[in-house]
Length: 295
Length: 133
Image (cartoon, rainbow over all chains, first blue to last red; front, top):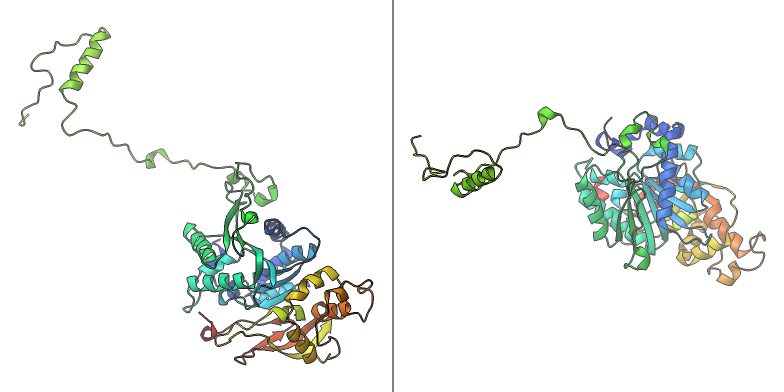
């Protein structure tokens, strides 16, 4: 199956049947809540027990919001898919839901939000699904409005799946242009399935606490949770090198100088062989001389 | 949608200067009781746009719920405020977190663009020609 981003625009891809999966698949629920917990950890909210007002961008069916509610926070969820929001209403999500396109800007008053998370949503901005869409402008509108609505020193943690390095660069550059400090934290970088990238952004000037946290499993440790790879392809997690068939390997070309090795090399070689006690023809005026061209 | 969110939300349409505050048209609203949390309300109070909140409660038909001036920090942290039904804390809590707007619309003050609310979810999607960039 190709990735959802290349199949259809989000408001069409997440139709009723696709949204239904999010209420029934315990695997999706498990993974989503685990990512949200990690995002909250990276968000590093002050540990004073006071609930905060957070944003959940691309909240979908409210799975990530459930984790936020469990921690006691109030949240406002954005999503572009009506079907997903309907599922969220069915699940009785505690936060307020908005049907909106993040590429059009968030539309919030400046400096009122204490933090933002986003689970697997930002990469959708890299697509141009309509002729009027310009990914760069949409990323600019999104990060610009996010920067404005966050309070000074607030953080945003955006988990995303970039299709390639260029997409990832484009997202990070847009965030930096908007004025954010921060960068990408990669968890389990050596694993193909458990690998997750988090864009950790701090609003306002860089300070001591805006240094990037370390990703998990960067020292080569493998993700120990087996349910990430429970569908029978667990061994690919450990594979780090890819074998090449012998016949496909390109042949090494031997480097040769155009004029051969030269008289000095030849004399040296003969001397070496003589020292080893081999029978070598004596050095004469013909040794190592050039052949005539017609030879 | 709670009034807390309404208080934060602004119109994003092209032509809107600030797009704030969005005028509230209410068809149906409901109340869901939540446990009050004085710390959250105290932290939230400086961020609330008080006139917009008062205007929203008036649009709901509850003019006596909130006073003209915002409550002070002392009023919110007074002993037993969380238990007393009529205290400033409980009124603020009710206005911000317990009232849910189910059906209605939000109207941009600058452009008169209408954002409908259905089943408690405002539709903030803009058409191609309304996007600002």
